[in-house]
Length: 162
Length: 107
Image (cartoon, rainbow over all chains, first blue to last red; front, side, top):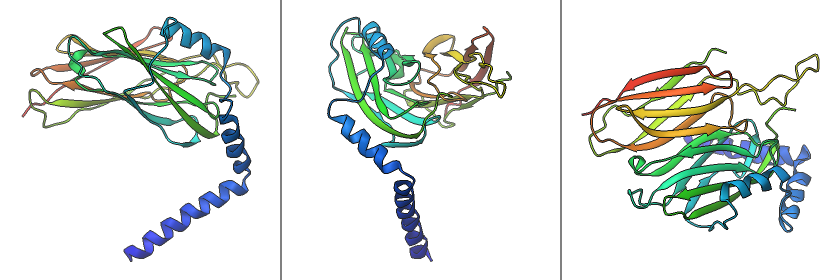
């Protein structure tokens, strides 16, 4: 019985894969992968927000783990987990985590402010994604350092309204 | 817009533990980009600020934009320094603040 359930689940996944491909999603994914080479298009507003948050400094791509689905079926509701590798002591802690979208109508999604009492710099939330794009997470450290992480998410049905 | 908060705290925390604090508030988080059936733009209406205090001290704060999903959910960690009461405050675009309190049960 259990084995049967396993098989049927596998079949459903396979069906989903073929069904989404048949629904014309495959060209979208291929297009996304293709656009990967020169980089996905980033909004002007994103560039402005990014410059404002980093204050012109170049963030280091290090010590941030971001958990996002590779493929978001519903862009209205995308779970995100952000973890920054930090000792979270009075001398060295994460002051803020900025969540920035490269292709939403509004680039600045959220800012989370942390303190040493948080002990572990781990924040979870749920975000909207208007279309396939890079999601940028910036971590502002008490030492003045700025860290960054870039995660590409493919979006089937976009969020953010019309 | 009625907003109902929901809080999830561990029920067997000890002093020194790092606990997970989960919060959610029911809210439409209207982006201001959508139109109603008459083609009129629906004005933006979001929860834009969230503050968490423990024992009267701020322990976590967030600013939300329109890119946060409806019914904004946030989870964060905190090291337990001693017994206390959590106080959470969500503020919307109209300046209305919804407050919820929850005591932390220590073992």
